[in-house]
Length: 461
Image (tube, rainbow, N blue to C red; front, top):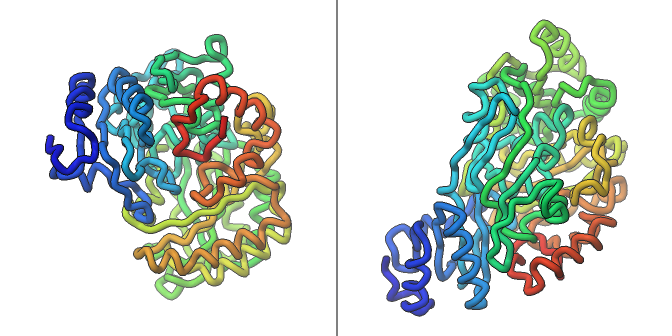
């Protein structure tokens, strides 16, 4: 390891190197630029050190090091966090990307998942047993950030949020202790990590409840961008079996073979279906989805469940420039649909897809105080983002998304989903947790009084 250009004292680095089995990467090392890179290219930061941990011991040593030396600590799982909290300037990045072991117990329907795993890792490990759990809709997303923020996906209506399927975590706290948290042991921390983000420590492994889902009827159907289609979608969710996952997308037609070329780049809306019910009902589901409006094109087929979590991967690869806003809504009021039509027509790029996640069904069967994630009375979670190929273009489109969010806000709930919040949304943290914020603050004061874990949507102790 080259340390001559590192702002950290060589003796400090040597001390840490003696305590970890993983790799230390400092400025001047050949792979430093790769090690500091995150998914959202808006964040081009230069940490003093990146620790590529391989086990919980490495995590504990790194947490102790950052705390004792008074250094900022960024914790990175998949690195997808839009605000760039997985990196920092001048501090330490704890990269969990090599902690990707998974053990599946098919009889108990449980999976123990390393803190650096992506949802692709989880899907590949569980699918051979005909099992799955709620995960992200982009397969390269890390399990850690998505789960600790709540965790929405194609199976949310049937199986609940990712955090609802969390039965245990191994957690390294700010004092360097490694705790196994369950509903019976360190239950307050278990409650907090189910939606409280990275405020309470580093999760080195997650244990998930699995469900019998092997193959689904899945894929997108596109329609012209029209308020009538959006209203019919709203009715679809209100009346449908919970085994129907159906994300609403609003944006510009993508260049896919099943969508006529004249619609490429033109305003459209679509439904990404995930029917996990019996195959003999597929035709009924296809007909119901087609009834929402004039079908411009569709690719709705039986597929292994892991495949549906890859459908957005090519649309939003790493290295693009993002700026996000999020909102919760009850029932998708007409004012929200009007905003979709108005702002959807001026979507700035094909990757700038507005995505609406239904969070009813099983998500509503958990009380708003049962987990840190409190929006159990929301029916939909809305993600807005200009996604561009240059920093300048993304900066130029921030007013578009702020206007879009402002048009939705009078018809939406006060807070939003923490995983859809950008770095300038810190003033919304209290609203994001509602009346759970007081309990979270009390727990933060107890377990991280120095706010070591502050590079997140921070709950200030």
